[in-house]
Amino acid sequence: MGNFVLLDWIRICLIAILVYLAYYDLRTFRLPDVITLPLILLGLLFNSLSNQRFISFQDAIIGAILGYTCLWLLNLLYRIVKKQDGVGMGDAKLLAALGAWLGWFALPSILLMASLTGLIGGIIWLQWNKQNHRSAFPFGPFLAIAGIIELLWPQTLQTLLLSKPV
Image (tube, rainbow, N blue to C red; front, side, top):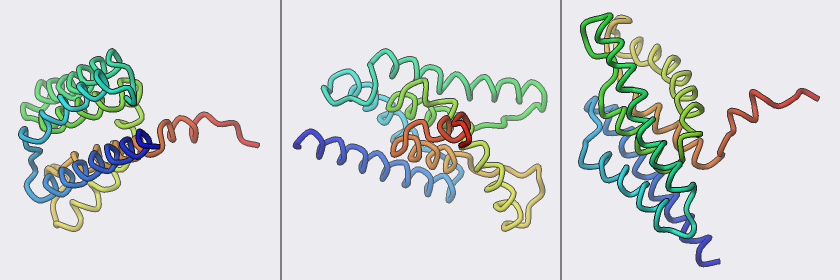
């Protein structure tokens, strides 16, 4: 019972941090290193030292590396084509943190959910703020929402997409 309660508190704290990061990114267009970098480290430590870890330490390391590298490469390609940044590195660090906590196998779901909600949310954001399609909008909130969904209901997207209709 005690370990179950501890995992619940860890999930609650992680959700609170993700909600705060989403709010902060909406207000400032920044994801502060003072939060994202310790979040990566805490995810790695939790999954390496805890008996109640979410994933193996190896999956956490791979998740952190792939999470960061994926958005870093996407930004590099965008910079080559458009001569400007397309994704902030705070977003890459947030995805690395989600990879450290939830593992590399959660990253495709997180990215797909964040991209779909970001597409819809981005259109609403740009309309609300009366900006054109070339204007920037924060992607961190969508990563945070997708991370929370994956934390609370793991592999929901795979279940929805791959389940056989009855």
